[in-house]
Length: 112
Length: 351
Image 1: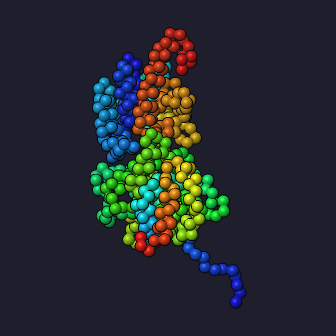
Image 2 (image 1 turned 90 degrees about the horizontal axis):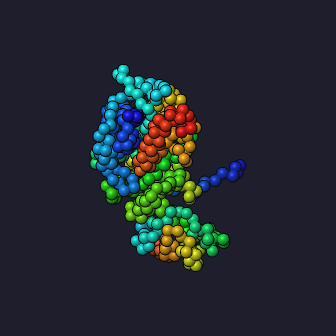
Image 3 (image 1 turned 180 degrees about the horizontal axis):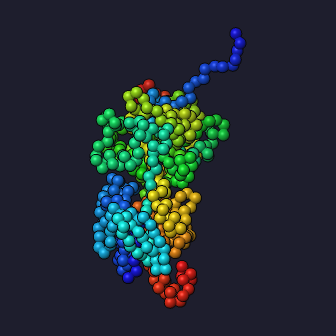
Protein backbone atom coordinates (compact mmCIF):
# COMPACT_ATOMS: atom_id res chain seq x y z
CA UNK A 1 0.00 0.00 0.00
CA UNK A 2 1.25 3.46 -0.85
CA UNK A 3 1.80 5.65 2.19
CA UNK A 4 0.53 9.14 1.32
CA UNK A 5 1.43 10.59 4.70
CA UNK A 6 -2.19 11.27 5.72
CA UNK A 7 -3.28 10.62 9.26
CA UNK A 8 -6.12 11.53 11.56
CA UNK A 9 -5.47 14.67 13.55
CA UNK A 10 -6.88 15.30 17.01
CA UNK A 11 -9.77 17.77 16.96
CA UNK A 12 -8.46 21.19 18.01
CA UNK A 13 -11.89 22.79 18.14
CA UNK A 14 -13.22 24.12 21.40
CA UNK A 15 -16.74 22.71 21.69
CA UNK A 16 -18.60 24.89 24.13
CA UNK A 17 -21.62 22.60 24.03
CA UNK A 18 -19.64 19.60 25.30
CA UNK A 19 -17.24 21.39 27.58
CA UNK A 20 -17.93 21.56 31.27
CA UNK A 21 -17.20 24.70 33.26
CA UNK A 22 -16.89 22.87 36.61
CA UNK A 23 -13.25 23.92 37.03
CA UNK A 24 -14.13 27.57 36.59
CA UNK A 25 -16.93 27.30 39.13
CA UNK A 26 -14.67 25.49 41.63
CA UNK A 27 -11.82 28.01 41.30
CA UNK A 28 -14.22 30.96 41.40
CA UNK A 29 -15.71 29.64 44.65
CA UNK A 30 -12.28 29.49 46.25
CA UNK A 31 -10.65 32.48 44.57
CA UNK A 32 -13.24 34.85 43.07
CA UNK A 33 -10.60 37.19 41.62
CA UNK A 34 -10.19 34.80 38.66
CA UNK A 35 -13.16 36.68 37.18
CA UNK A 36 -11.23 39.96 37.24
CA UNK A 37 -8.86 38.77 34.50
CA UNK A 38 -9.11 40.70 31.22
CA UNK A 39 -6.52 38.65 29.32
CA UNK A 40 -3.93 41.41 29.04
CA UNK A 41 -1.00 38.98 29.44
CA UNK A 42 1.12 41.05 31.83
CA UNK A 43 1.37 37.98 34.10
CA UNK A 44 2.73 35.80 31.32
CA UNK A 45 5.16 38.38 29.94
CA UNK A 46 7.06 38.57 33.21
CA UNK A 47 6.72 34.91 34.19
CA UNK A 48 10.05 33.38 35.30
CA UNK A 49 9.02 29.89 34.25
CA UNK A 50 7.74 30.93 30.82
CA UNK A 51 11.27 31.24 29.42
CA UNK A 52 11.62 27.47 29.77
CA UNK A 53 8.13 26.12 29.18
CA UNK A 54 4.69 27.06 27.81
CA UNK A 55 3.34 28.33 31.11
CA UNK A 56 1.01 31.30 30.65
CA UNK A 57 -1.50 32.22 33.30
CA UNK A 58 -3.44 34.27 30.75
CA UNK A 59 -3.89 31.20 28.54
CA UNK A 60 -4.63 28.90 31.49
CA UNK A 61 -7.39 31.19 32.75
CA UNK A 62 -8.90 31.21 29.26
CA UNK A 63 -8.65 27.38 29.09
CA UNK A 64 -10.51 27.19 32.38
CA UNK A 65 -13.12 29.66 31.16
CA UNK A 66 -13.72 27.58 28.03
CA UNK A 67 -13.70 24.26 29.91
CA UNK A 68 -10.59 22.97 28.10
CA UNK A 69 -9.56 20.90 31.11
CA UNK A 70 -6.97 18.67 29.51
CA UNK A 71 -4.97 21.68 28.32
CA UNK A 72 -3.87 22.77 31.77
CA UNK A 73 -3.26 19.35 33.37
CA UNK A 74 0.54 19.41 33.08
CA UNK A 75 1.19 23.10 32.57
CA UNK A 76 -0.29 24.28 35.84
CA UNK A 77 2.32 22.32 37.82
CA UNK A 78 5.19 24.20 36.13
CA UNK A 79 4.53 27.24 38.27
CA UNK A 80 7.10 27.90 41.03
CA UNK A 81 4.87 30.37 42.90
CA UNK A 82 7.50 33.11 42.73
CA UNK A 83 4.71 35.69 42.71
CA UNK A 84 5.99 38.04 40.01
CA UNK A 85 2.61 37.85 38.28
CA UNK A 86 0.92 38.87 41.52
CA UNK A 87 2.82 42.17 41.43
CA UNK A 88 2.27 42.62 37.72
CA UNK A 89 -1.52 42.12 37.41
CA UNK A 90 -3.19 45.51 36.80
CA UNK A 91 -6.55 44.31 38.08
CA UNK A 92 -5.15 42.81 41.25
CA UNK A 93 -6.04 39.19 40.52
CA UNK A 94 -4.67 36.96 43.28
CA UNK A 95 -2.70 35.03 40.69
CA UNK A 96 -0.89 32.69 43.07
CA UNK A 97 -4.14 31.66 44.66
CA UNK A 98 -5.72 31.18 41.22
CA UNK A 99 -2.90 28.85 40.20
CA UNK A 100 -3.04 27.01 43.52
CA UNK A 101 -6.78 26.37 43.08
CA UNK A 102 -6.19 25.39 39.44
CA UNK A 103 -3.80 22.71 40.71
CA UNK A 104 -6.37 21.62 43.29
CA UNK A 105 -9.00 21.46 40.54
CA UNK A 106 -6.75 19.23 38.43
CA UNK A 107 -5.94 16.97 41.38
CA UNK A 108 -9.57 16.70 42.48
CA UNK A 109 -11.13 16.77 39.03
CA UNK A 110 -13.31 13.70 39.64
CA UNK A 111 -14.76 15.21 42.78
CA UNK A 112 -15.75 18.53 41.20
CA UNK B 1 -35.21 88.59 15.41
CA UNK B 2 -32.69 86.17 13.97
CA UNK B 3 -34.09 82.78 13.08
CA UNK B 4 -32.65 79.29 12.91
CA UNK B 5 -34.04 76.26 11.12
CA UNK B 6 -33.03 73.01 12.81
CA UNK B 7 -33.39 69.98 10.58
CA UNK B 8 -33.99 66.95 12.79
CA UNK B 9 -35.82 66.73 16.11
CA UNK B 10 -33.80 64.06 17.87
CA UNK B 11 -31.61 64.49 20.93
CA UNK B 12 -29.25 66.96 19.21
CA UNK B 13 -32.01 68.99 17.56
CA UNK B 14 -34.16 69.24 20.70
CA UNK B 15 -31.29 70.26 22.96
CA UNK B 16 -29.97 72.85 20.49
CA UNK B 17 -33.50 74.20 19.98
CA UNK B 18 -34.02 74.65 23.71
CA UNK B 19 -30.76 76.53 24.17
CA UNK B 20 -31.08 78.71 21.07
CA UNK B 21 -34.62 79.60 22.04
CA UNK B 22 -33.52 80.54 25.55
CA UNK B 23 -30.91 82.83 24.01
CA UNK B 24 -33.69 84.72 22.28
CA UNK B 25 -33.53 83.34 18.76
CA UNK B 26 -36.55 82.28 16.76
CA UNK B 27 -36.26 78.51 16.37
CA UNK B 28 -38.05 76.12 14.03
CA UNK B 29 -37.48 72.37 14.33
CA UNK B 30 -38.27 70.33 11.23
CA UNK B 31 -38.92 66.67 12.07
CA UNK B 32 -40.01 64.14 9.48
CA UNK B 33 -41.57 61.71 11.99
CA UNK B 34 -44.83 62.30 13.85
CA UNK B 35 -43.02 62.79 17.15
CA UNK B 36 -39.71 64.30 18.24
CA UNK B 37 -36.97 62.31 19.99
CA UNK B 38 -35.45 60.45 17.06
CA UNK B 39 -33.95 57.05 17.80
CA UNK B 40 -34.21 57.58 21.53
CA UNK B 41 -37.86 56.55 21.05
CA UNK B 42 -36.66 53.02 20.28
CA UNK B 43 -34.54 52.67 23.40
CA UNK B 44 -35.39 51.19 26.81
CA UNK B 45 -32.45 52.12 29.06
CA UNK B 46 -29.23 54.09 28.64
CA UNK B 47 -25.64 53.16 29.43
CA UNK B 48 -23.79 53.25 31.73
CA UNK B 49 -26.23 54.02 34.55
CA UNK B 50 -29.19 52.23 32.90
CA UNK B 51 -31.47 55.19 33.34
CA UNK B 52 -34.80 54.79 31.49
CA UNK B 53 -34.54 56.39 28.03
CA UNK B 54 -38.10 57.68 28.42
CA UNK B 55 -37.01 59.83 31.35
CA UNK B 56 -34.32 61.60 29.30
CA UNK B 57 -36.66 61.91 26.34
CA UNK B 58 -39.41 63.44 28.48
CA UNK B 59 -36.97 65.97 29.87
CA UNK B 60 -35.67 66.94 26.42
CA UNK B 61 -39.20 67.29 25.05
CA UNK B 62 -40.36 69.24 28.06
CA UNK B 63 -37.52 71.76 27.76
CA UNK B 64 -38.19 72.18 24.05
CA UNK B 65 -41.87 73.00 24.58
CA UNK B 66 -41.73 76.76 25.07
CA UNK B 67 -41.22 79.19 22.24
CA UNK B 68 -40.13 76.65 19.66
CA UNK B 69 -41.94 76.09 16.40
CA UNK B 70 -42.02 72.30 16.11
CA UNK B 71 -43.00 71.12 12.65
CA UNK B 72 -43.72 67.38 12.70
CA UNK B 73 -44.33 65.14 9.68
CA UNK B 74 -42.30 67.69 7.78
CA UNK B 75 -39.64 67.15 5.17
CA UNK B 76 -37.26 69.61 3.58
CA UNK B 77 -37.70 69.36 -0.18
CA UNK B 78 -35.28 72.05 -1.21
CA UNK B 79 -32.96 74.65 0.33
CA UNK B 80 -31.62 77.81 -1.25
CA UNK B 81 -28.95 80.09 0.12
CA UNK B 82 -29.46 83.78 -0.49
CA UNK B 83 -28.05 87.08 0.78
CA UNK B 84 -30.22 87.08 3.90
CA UNK B 85 -29.80 83.46 4.80
CA UNK B 86 -31.74 80.42 3.66
CA UNK B 87 -35.09 79.63 2.09
CA UNK B 88 -36.40 76.15 2.88
CA UNK B 89 -39.13 74.58 0.79
CA UNK B 90 -41.05 72.00 2.83
CA UNK B 91 -43.55 69.32 1.91
CA UNK B 92 -47.19 70.39 1.37
CA UNK B 93 -45.90 73.51 -0.43
CA UNK B 94 -44.79 75.31 2.69
CA UNK B 95 -41.85 77.67 2.85
CA UNK B 96 -39.81 79.06 5.71
CA UNK B 97 -36.75 81.29 5.88
CA UNK B 98 -33.90 81.27 8.37
CA UNK B 99 -30.67 83.14 9.01
CA UNK B 100 -28.86 79.95 9.89
CA UNK B 101 -29.44 76.24 9.30
CA UNK B 102 -28.54 73.55 11.80
CA UNK B 103 -28.21 70.00 10.52
CA UNK B 104 -29.25 67.64 13.32
CA UNK B 105 -30.26 64.72 11.14
CA UNK B 106 -28.52 62.05 13.15
CA UNK B 107 -27.42 58.62 11.98
CA UNK B 108 -28.87 55.57 10.30
CA UNK B 109 -28.74 52.14 11.93
CA UNK B 110 -26.79 49.54 10.02
CA UNK B 111 -29.17 47.14 8.31
CA UNK B 112 -28.09 43.80 9.78
CA UNK B 113 -29.65 41.81 6.94
CA UNK B 114 -26.84 43.13 4.74
CA UNK B 115 -24.51 40.79 6.64
CA UNK B 116 -26.40 37.84 5.20
CA UNK B 117 -23.93 35.36 6.69
CA UNK B 118 -25.17 36.26 10.18
CA UNK B 119 -28.71 35.27 9.27
CA UNK B 120 -30.69 38.31 10.40
CA UNK B 121 -34.09 38.14 8.76
CA UNK B 122 -33.35 34.54 7.74
CA UNK B 123 -32.92 32.65 11.02
CA UNK B 124 -35.65 33.07 13.61
CA UNK B 125 -33.41 33.50 16.62
CA UNK B 126 -31.04 36.13 15.32
CA UNK B 127 -32.03 39.61 16.50
CA UNK B 128 -30.37 43.05 16.68
CA UNK B 129 -29.54 45.17 19.71
CA UNK B 130 -32.49 47.41 18.76
CA UNK B 131 -34.88 44.42 18.74
CA UNK B 132 -33.55 43.44 22.17
CA UNK B 133 -34.03 46.97 23.48
CA UNK B 134 -37.66 46.83 22.36
CA UNK B 135 -38.07 43.42 23.98
CA UNK B 136 -36.82 44.97 27.24
CA UNK B 137 -39.36 47.74 26.79
CA UNK B 138 -42.15 45.16 26.40
CA UNK B 139 -40.68 43.10 29.21
CA UNK B 140 -40.75 39.86 27.21
CA UNK B 141 -37.51 38.06 26.38
CA UNK B 142 -38.30 34.89 24.46
CA UNK B 143 -36.96 32.93 21.54
CA UNK B 144 -39.03 32.67 18.36
CA UNK B 145 -40.46 29.41 19.79
CA UNK B 146 -41.62 31.20 22.91
CA UNK B 147 -38.98 29.66 25.17
CA UNK B 148 -36.78 31.52 27.63
CA UNK B 149 -33.30 31.70 26.07
CA UNK B 150 -30.63 30.10 28.24
CA UNK B 151 -27.56 30.48 26.04
CA UNK B 152 -27.18 33.87 24.44
CA UNK B 153 -24.39 35.28 22.29
CA UNK B 154 -23.67 38.89 21.34
CA UNK B 155 -21.71 39.77 18.20
CA UNK B 156 -19.88 43.08 18.39
CA UNK B 157 -19.05 45.35 15.43
CA UNK B 158 -21.92 44.31 13.13
CA UNK B 159 -21.62 46.75 10.25
CA UNK B 160 -18.84 48.67 11.98
CA UNK B 161 -15.10 48.49 11.28
CA UNK B 162 -16.20 46.57 8.22
CA UNK B 163 -15.03 48.09 4.96
CA UNK B 164 -16.97 45.60 2.87
CA UNK B 165 -20.14 46.67 4.65
CA UNK B 166 -19.24 50.26 3.72
CA UNK B 167 -18.43 51.37 7.24
CA UNK B 168 -14.72 51.57 8.08
CA UNK B 169 -15.39 53.51 11.28
CA UNK B 170 -15.98 52.34 14.84
CA UNK B 171 -19.54 53.10 15.96
CA UNK B 172 -18.19 53.59 19.46
CA UNK B 173 -21.37 53.03 21.49
CA UNK B 174 -22.07 49.37 20.66
CA UNK B 175 -19.44 47.84 22.98
CA UNK B 176 -20.90 49.48 26.05
CA UNK B 177 -24.46 48.91 24.77
CA UNK B 178 -23.65 45.19 24.53
CA UNK B 179 -22.26 45.09 28.05
CA UNK B 180 -25.33 46.91 29.36
CA UNK B 181 -27.73 44.61 27.52
CA UNK B 182 -25.88 41.49 28.63
CA UNK B 183 -26.22 42.56 32.27
CA UNK B 184 -29.91 43.37 31.76
CA UNK B 185 -30.47 39.93 30.22
CA UNK B 186 -28.61 38.17 33.01
CA UNK B 187 -30.69 39.97 35.62
CA UNK B 188 -33.92 38.95 33.87
CA UNK B 189 -32.74 35.37 33.24
CA UNK B 190 -30.31 34.57 36.08
CA UNK B 191 -29.60 30.98 34.97
CA UNK B 192 -28.64 32.03 31.46
CA UNK B 193 -25.10 31.88 30.07
CA UNK B 194 -24.00 34.89 28.07
CA UNK B 195 -21.04 35.17 25.70
CA UNK B 196 -19.71 38.31 24.03
CA UNK B 197 -17.73 37.95 20.80
CA UNK B 198 -15.60 40.99 20.14
CA UNK B 199 -12.63 42.27 18.12
CA UNK B 200 -11.63 44.92 20.66
CA UNK B 201 -13.55 46.14 23.66
CA UNK B 202 -13.67 49.91 23.54
CA UNK B 203 -14.75 51.09 26.96
CA UNK B 204 -13.86 54.71 26.31
CA UNK B 205 -16.33 56.54 28.52
CA UNK B 206 -16.51 57.31 32.18
CA UNK B 207 -17.83 54.34 34.21
CA UNK B 208 -17.75 52.07 31.11
CA UNK B 209 -14.75 50.01 32.25
CA UNK B 210 -16.43 49.52 35.63
CA UNK B 211 -19.57 48.20 33.91
CA UNK B 212 -17.44 45.80 31.86
CA UNK B 213 -15.81 44.51 35.03
CA UNK B 214 -19.22 44.21 36.70
CA UNK B 215 -20.36 42.08 33.75
CA UNK B 216 -17.39 39.75 34.25
CA UNK B 217 -17.27 39.60 38.03
CA UNK B 218 -20.87 39.92 39.18
CA UNK B 219 -22.68 38.37 36.23
CA UNK B 220 -20.05 35.89 34.97
CA UNK B 221 -20.52 37.03 31.38
CA UNK B 222 -17.77 35.55 29.19
CA UNK B 223 -15.89 37.70 26.72
CA UNK B 224 -14.39 35.78 23.82
CA UNK B 225 -12.13 37.58 21.37
CA UNK B 226 -13.02 36.62 17.82
CA UNK B 227 -15.15 37.72 14.93
CA UNK B 228 -18.01 35.59 13.61
CA UNK B 229 -17.62 34.49 10.03
CA UNK B 230 -20.94 32.70 9.65
CA UNK B 231 -23.93 31.55 11.69
CA UNK B 232 -25.95 28.40 10.99
CA UNK B 233 -29.47 27.41 11.96
CA UNK B 234 -29.99 24.00 13.56
CA UNK B 235 -33.15 21.95 13.03
CA UNK B 236 -34.49 23.03 16.41
CA UNK B 237 -34.00 26.70 15.39
CA UNK B 238 -31.05 27.19 17.72
CA UNK B 239 -28.13 29.00 16.13
CA UNK B 240 -24.71 27.44 15.71
CA UNK B 241 -21.75 29.74 15.55
CA UNK B 242 -18.15 29.02 14.73
CA UNK B 243 -15.55 31.53 15.68
CA UNK B 244 -11.84 31.64 16.30
CA UNK B 245 -10.97 32.20 19.93
CA UNK B 246 -8.11 34.46 18.91
CA UNK B 247 -6.56 34.67 22.38
CA UNK B 248 -6.24 30.89 22.47
CA UNK B 249 -5.67 30.61 18.72
CA UNK B 250 -8.23 27.81 18.47
CA UNK B 251 -11.49 27.41 16.59
CA UNK B 252 -14.57 27.41 18.81
CA UNK B 253 -18.09 26.15 18.25
CA UNK B 254 -21.22 26.84 20.19
CA UNK B 255 -25.01 26.48 19.95
CA UNK B 256 -27.06 29.43 21.09
CA UNK B 257 -30.75 29.94 21.82
CA UNK B 258 -30.49 33.59 20.81
CA UNK B 259 -27.91 35.55 18.86
CA UNK B 260 -27.87 39.34 19.28
CA UNK B 261 -26.16 41.51 16.67
CA UNK B 262 -24.80 44.81 17.97
CA UNK B 263 -25.59 47.03 14.99
CA UNK B 264 -23.62 50.20 14.43
CA UNK B 265 -24.25 53.76 13.36
CA UNK B 266 -23.76 54.83 9.78
CA UNK B 267 -24.15 58.15 7.96
CA UNK B 268 -27.73 58.94 7.08
CA UNK B 269 -28.28 58.78 3.32
CA UNK B 270 -31.62 60.59 3.56
CA UNK B 271 -29.99 64.02 3.70
CA UNK B 272 -28.00 63.80 0.49
CA UNK B 273 -30.39 66.17 -1.32
CA UNK B 274 -30.08 68.80 1.43
CA UNK B 275 -26.30 68.50 1.44
CA UNK B 276 -26.26 68.84 -2.32
CA UNK B 277 -28.44 71.98 -2.22
CA UNK B 278 -26.28 73.59 0.43
CA UNK B 279 -22.98 72.33 -1.02
CA UNK B 280 -22.07 70.90 2.37
CA UNK B 281 -19.20 68.44 2.16
CA UNK B 282 -18.89 64.98 3.65
CA UNK B 283 -15.74 63.23 4.80
CA UNK B 284 -14.57 59.95 3.29
CA UNK B 285 -16.46 58.02 6.01
CA UNK B 286 -19.75 59.62 4.89
CA UNK B 287 -20.29 61.75 8.00
CA UNK B 288 -20.23 65.54 7.55
CA UNK B 289 -16.92 67.29 7.22
CA UNK B 290 -16.22 69.54 10.17
CA UNK B 291 -14.61 72.91 9.36
CA UNK B 292 -12.00 72.13 12.02
CA UNK B 293 -12.52 68.95 14.00
CA UNK B 294 -10.64 70.30 17.02
CA UNK B 295 -11.52 73.99 17.16
CA UNK B 296 -14.83 74.43 15.33
CA UNK B 297 -16.36 70.95 15.22
CA UNK B 298 -19.92 72.23 14.68
CA UNK B 299 -19.15 74.35 11.61
CA UNK B 300 -19.51 72.92 8.14
CA UNK B 301 -17.67 74.21 5.07
CA UNK B 302 -20.62 76.54 4.35
CA UNK B 303 -21.00 79.74 6.42
CA UNK B 304 -24.35 79.73 8.22
CA UNK B 305 -24.75 75.96 8.04
CA UNK B 306 -23.93 74.13 11.26
CA UNK B 307 -23.94 70.48 12.24
CA UNK B 308 -24.68 68.85 15.57
CA UNK B 309 -24.89 65.34 16.99
CA UNK B 310 -24.24 62.10 15.15
CA UNK B 311 -24.39 63.76 11.72
CA UNK B 312 -20.68 64.40 12.36
CA UNK B 313 -19.94 60.88 13.60
CA UNK B 314 -21.04 58.43 16.31
CA UNK B 315 -21.70 59.99 19.70
CA UNK B 316 -23.20 59.06 23.05
CA UNK B 317 -26.24 60.94 24.38
CA UNK B 318 -24.01 62.88 26.78
CA UNK B 319 -21.64 63.90 24.01
CA UNK B 320 -24.58 64.92 21.82
CA UNK B 321 -25.95 67.16 24.58
CA UNK B 322 -22.52 68.83 25.00
CA UNK B 323 -22.28 69.19 21.24
CA UNK B 324 -25.74 70.77 21.09
CA UNK B 325 -24.78 73.33 23.73
CA UNK B 326 -21.54 74.09 21.91
CA UNK B 327 -23.26 74.63 18.57
CA UNK B 328 -25.63 77.07 20.27
CA UNK B 329 -22.69 79.34 21.06
CA UNK B 330 -21.24 78.90 17.60
CA UNK B 331 -24.54 79.93 15.97
CA UNK B 332 -25.01 82.86 18.34
CA UNK B 333 -21.51 84.13 17.51
CA UNK B 334 -22.20 83.75 13.83
CA UNK B 335 -25.52 85.59 13.91
CA UNK B 336 -24.20 88.44 16.07
CA UNK B 337 -21.08 88.79 13.96
CA UNK B 338 -23.11 88.76 10.80
CA UNK B 339 -24.79 91.97 11.91
CA UNK B 340 -21.44 93.48 12.82
CA UNK B 341 -19.84 92.32 9.61
CA UNK B 342 -22.49 94.01 7.53
CA UNK B 343 -21.58 97.27 9.24
CA UNK B 344 -17.92 96.68 8.52
CA UNK B 345 -18.74 95.30 5.04
CA UNK B 346 -16.20 92.61 5.58
CA UNK B 347 -18.17 89.43 5.95
CA UNK B 348 -15.28 87.03 5.61
CA UNK B 349 -13.41 88.54 8.54
CA UNK B 350 -15.92 87.17 11.01
CA UNK B 351 -16.75 83.90 9.34
